[in-house]
Picture (cartoon, rainbow, N blue to C red):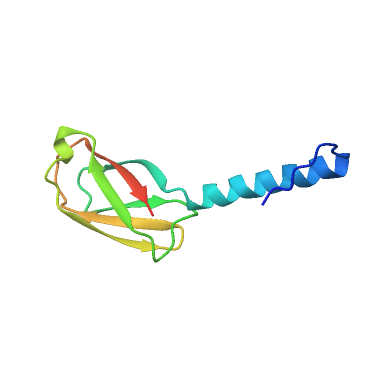
Length: 101
């Protein structure tokens, strides 16, 4: 909790600033990781790397291109990455947006 006074010393301002920064950092740690991934043609899996991904992460994919609609996939999450397993075919532009929670 922030403790506000009428007359602030430089030390008070520093403490308040540190508390605000810590609060913002705490929120950023709880925000989902988002991005875009395109499945390579002729590949049966695609690896997405991000240092915030953990083995307990939940990954949600959403098609961003018509060629991505109806694609069947599953994923495994690990430390610093998740792998999406999908059909190995010649269809290009299988692009998805993703969120990791």
